[in-house]
Amino acid sequence: MSSHPLVPIARTRVKLVVCAALTAVAVTAGLPGWTVAALALTCLAIPLAVVLAGGGPLLRQLLLPAPRPRAESGLAHTQEERERFVT
Image 1 (cartoon, rainbow, N blue to C red):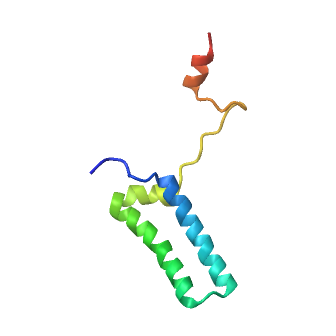
Image 2 (cartoon, rainbow, N blue to C red):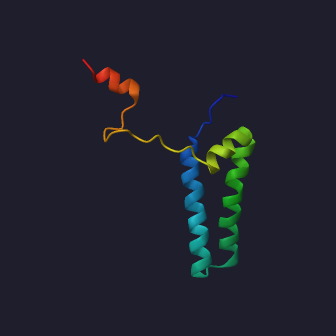
Image 3 (cartoon, helix red, strand yellow):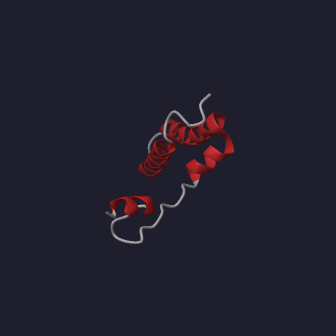
């Protein structure tokens, strides 16, 4: 088994958010119960699959994404990239 997931966790997070949004829309729109149940169960199955694939740390990455580093300037380069640009 490899040390990194086969599917990027960010892509899985997007699918989870989309599924949750579709569930909310289905409830709001008054769709049949089986449709709402299928969407809700899919929302529950995604984190379960992540836990089975990578354990707690991967689930934490799914549910609590790391904050993006703030850029000190408008260029958003890392310190290493800035040093490479200096001639």
